[in-house]
Every structure is written in C-alpha cells, then in structure tokens.
Image (cartoon, rainbow, N blue to C red; front, side, top):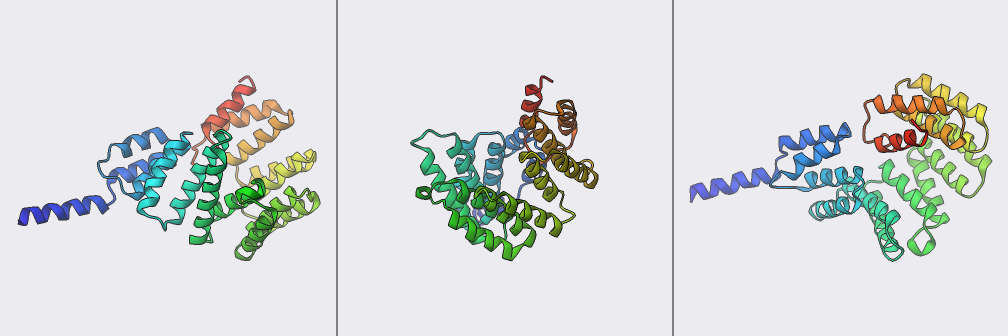
Length: 283
C-alpha cells in the first residue's frame, strides 16, 4: 500500500513538474530551430499545457497551422484562463482562415476573433493580442465581427494604456480610413514618444516609402541602422521595401544575406521568407 501511495505521488510530480526537455526545447525555439524543439517535446510521455503550447507554437512556425491549432486546443482545455495560450490559439485559427476554402474560412476567422477577444479580456496589457485584434476589426467584415467602430474604440483603449502604442494604433486606423496625413502624424507621434524603439522608426520609414517619399524613407532607414546596427528586423524591412519599390536591388540582396547570417528569434520574419525573397532576386 505504501509503495502504491509513493507511486501515485511520483506520478503526480511527473505530471506537474517542468521536465528539463521543456527548457531545452524552449531554447531551440528561441533559436528558430523548431523541428529540433518539436522532436524533444513529442517524445515526452506526459504533456501538460505548457508543453502542448510550445508544440503548437513549433507547428505554427513551421507553417502547419492545423496541427498547431490541435495542440493549442488541448492546451487551452487544460488551462483555459491562460491569456497567452488563448492568444496563440487565435493566431493558429487566423492563419488557418487565411488558407482555408470559402466554406471553412468564416468559421475559423470567427474562432480567431473570439480567442483574441478572450485573450485581451484576460490580459488587457498584451500588445500582441491587442494588435492582432485591432487588425481583425479593421480587415474582417461586419458579419464576422469586424468593424471600424470596434477598431476605433480599441485604439482609444490602447492609447490609455500606452501612449506610443496607442498613437501607432490610431495611425493604423487612420490609414485604413485613407486619412493619410493623420496616419503619418500618429506614426510620427509614436516615434517621438518612444525614441529608443527602433520599430517605431521602421513603421514610419515603410509608411513614407509606400507613399512615394523615398528620400525621407531612406533617411529613416539610415537612422534605424544607426540605432540598431545589427538588428535583423532593420535589415529585413529595408530590403523588403526596396524589393517592393524595385530599386536598390543589389543593396536589398546584401541586406537579406546579412539577415540570414544573423542570430534570428521567433519575433523576426521567418528565415524561409528571406530565402524566398533572395530567390526572387535571382540570388
């Protein structure tokens, strides 16, 4: 009887403790080595919500969105009030909606919205969830829960929490309404309020380039490069802008080559996307 009791205790510990494989898998994930991370996790006999979440994120990063959502659904069933976990399930549904047929896409899109809204309700400070929910409201039709009035209200909420992020959100809304001068002003204000955040400068640089203001855009890209000389996102965004504008393609090629040699993280654009751009350039 004592042995049976001890076995139950050890089993419970095994089910709740974080195995060393999870830490190793997370390190693989942070280095964008998603297949290696997945291989470690799939071999674990007991998978709790944290393990299933990382499995889902690995599948997501590998472009296997159905498998990602299946793992994340199991994780959410175990930990339904985990805001970050719910957010990732929304991301997986969203990507599935983008690639689904006309019959499946609306249902998946609605599920994505529901997860984003739940994530924001659980953690109103999560910028990723707020940003994806804002994009959803701006892009989705009303019958799928989108709408300009929802986007405007959400942008106001973000502004109350974080001035720089809020002005960025209001700029995105203004751009969608084709109020381009107002959008530019909002993006400039966001950059002024967060002068050390290179991403704010990149947003403005891309925006000006999209509106034909090449010299101003290039000056901002130079500013971003000085702020963060080895930041992969600076290299990628500049290269992508040049490719879209069909100019300075040799510079774009060199930037992408540098990008691929950089230590990337999951927050950076996927390596495969940079490789596809290089192939497009004939590299």
